[in-house]
Length: 521
Length: 75
Image (cartoon, rainbow over all chains, first blue to last red):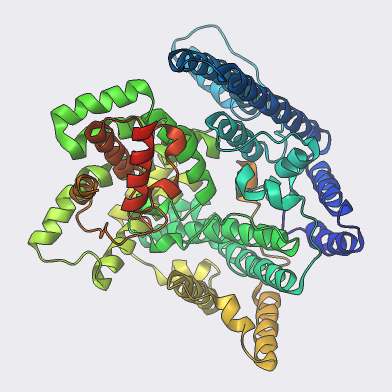
């Protein structure tokens, strides 16, 4: 099951018809039933886990809310000094409820995703120490979307604890917030403040949102069928037989895989956000022209935005602003100064964020390495920032000039391509072997490139992608611009686009469609 | 306000803090700089900024940061 499957492409128009015919009150119910049907087809009996998670956040959310109400009643007409004590006592209780709930959700996620990985580490240790122990473990299938909705549950309960939102008492609304079918498999990771209010509006379909939603889905199909699936053949060939290729070809393989990953994931997001738009629901964006970023840190505010924002808001800031780390910041600032002092605290929180980010992507050494790789570069950027600023000033280099920005994007792309190569490689040692060969033997062989199955059309479609990204970066809204054109020109563009997907899409024998990569995380 | 502007300019000299309204949304302040900023503000103004107040809306401009400081000073 994926958002590109025939099932989905039939389900959406059918749902549109039923949704439009239903009464305003019934529409949210239809969206919930459709969501559960989608999860049932994708995950069968494992649907039970999302149902339990819904009951869980409903119960814990109300518990936190009730404690807050009790606190307000208790501090009424009480002296200021006593009020402080009562507040602290209730905050402690709320903290315990929150931590208990988070631990429960994380244990379930851990049981499905990580037990196998940690059992294999233990077995390796036993084998190394010649201990006569071997733990047997059989891989279990994780419920669809568990990595996404677990984070949504944590965000929802944390927001109530922090006082950002009030608990939702309506179980049905919470169920739809957690299970809404377009974002259940691959995100975006939605906050209650993003969608909870919109989901139950039951507004009728309207021309603007339907046409714009369908266009957005079409753009996603283009990225997936015309780019990602075409790139899958050469990328699979290169990564499987890397020892037979020259360094130049391996480097192209890294670029190819990064483009494949970007087109597969951002294409899925286009389908997801487009589907939601059809039903008048605005989901948060997950990509913002990542390859135009200034540095690795900026890249992560443009690539998988909602995951980065989750780690920033629920791990990075709470951790670095906790009492022990704040005290540490004070000490290090006194010793190391204003720039490097807070970096020590930041580095500790950043390490935890990137460890979790790596692990979230999958239970494996390559993913952990991927997390640490980004941690290293983001920290290095912060450590050297002052040096770069001073160096540029001395050399009279304008850091906002075009050539400097191009240099920044070029440097960033190299870091990202290498990082994604480790992400794709089956083992970290293969990643290093590929990197070493790329650096030692950086030559291109025309013969090799011809055998990869890439032709001039493939470069053409990448140019289209680049041109559209460039326009978006310059804040030109391509779809609004096309929509404002006269009807004949407008529909000629739409038809040309549909025909392009049909002709240049990678289907049939000889093609290897990309599996939904982020659905496995 | 001048005290705050001095802190901000020392952290990121290249940013026009007096006129910027999108310090966070425009990605002019990254998370590590925010950490330095919070630490400086807490020392300078003798307040404690809780995690709940670390939201883009409170840090998008010098004026908004100052409003946050004033609010926390009153509490």
